[in-house]
Image 1 (cartoon, helix red, strand yellow):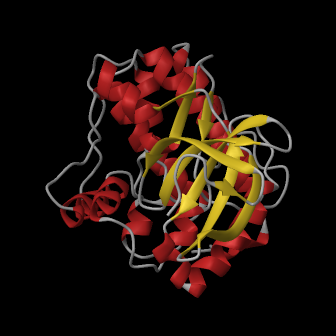
Image 2: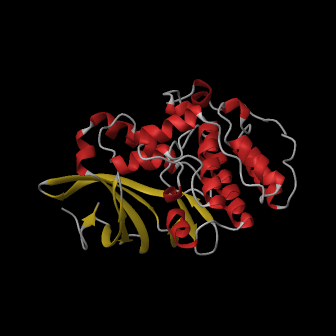
Length: 298
């Protein structure tokens, strides 16, 4: 197995375990070549037995490395090798973000002030817009996948990982339940993921930031998913200004075509709502969507 002091790819020395999840473990490491600190996500060895997953993940890693936006975690490298003669592994090397995930911040503080919640929303939407224009749909927007930097900036992480995980049998029940809280109705019905699916999920996340809990909860993933499909989203309490309530109502529309036209339009509406103003009129798309989005990649 790997641990503190393990060297990956002849250059990344593991220094401190930062956390773990359905995909594997994240470590702070030292890049001995460029002499900088990085984050290394080591995939679960069991994932490497799934050839379909590995092929999909390699493709996604290449695409993610091409995304350039301050709100998207930067991918530096991808590698495969052996930690020891008995353990084959694969890993992603990313920028090391100084901060903490949104779920930890919410657990500590509870609901956020409207201005801060909408600022986080708008920053995340800026990042999603860049990804969507390149044909990348996140598919797993939730608080643990948003990092809050110490300077207040927001970074969206794990782009493409949910897509790579699709079809595997290795996702934990906890991860499934967590994803169910934010899943768009069309995805819950087994339809293709589209950019509007991310907009719904981040609308759910925004509702949670402002109210203190997601709009739909339950004891099982199935119960939550059925609520997303069948039940109208609860409105924000009347203590919130009308532009904020309108923003969330549109984001949580059941049909993708009834939500915002794209992430940039929703970001503009969030910034306007933070100032107590109604959403600006849509400007209209100036360029066609990538073919992958037109086709509705799963």
